[in-house]
Length: 341
Image: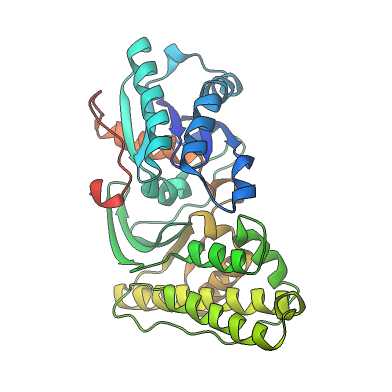
């Protein structure tokens, strides 16, 4: 029997709704919020207000594009967390209202697990390649850098995590210091193609196990700019491409060093990446190169599934629906990942 899931995602600054039938994506609608660009970062209050404006038309459009009416939905999957509490509250509240109105079951989803399970989405015209269990997933987004051992859609173990800044934060914070527009990661990626990745050397952390740290890299980058600009106020403008190329190379090396170590120790050959930073062209090229060198099967998400989207929430909800794991009306959103564990 076919299972149709409506997914709703509102964890940060993108309002998204999607419909899947089993694992096949029927629609995926995203409304982004340009209001944050002039502030150089997401303003939580503005984000939650924009979600309130966007969620009804986004859900309506997703249902129409899928050719589905609400009475044909088997369950509504929604992001419970982690994320911005006000933004999450909009999605959770809307889900509860639609659930009550249509007597539709609800399924809560861990946003980060949604990113990981996006590798199991299929498109109407083709099946995408899927990793086999167990596999390792390098989850890299604006607020999280993790290595996750994925043993099944229901069993995931975080074996490494950042102890301070995430990779995405390092990109965005360093970009802001250079005067680059927000979000800084894609801009650094573009400029890195024009620069010399060997032009500058930045500090790399020495952290035990599979954990990450990016605060030292960020500090090293800031000190380099400070010292150079004391002698040459135009240093950033004259060296912007080289700075971006060297910074990106260092971040990628930090990420891959621990991933390689984890793959060796766990003897796992299926390696995936997910999250917003998985759209970075340098990281995608580097992980494919390591795969060819080490005999990995590497899995890169399509670009439309790297950012926050409801397709991955619907897909994760599909797996939970199969296990009969439904959410109650008294379930509240949570901001921190620790509250979901």
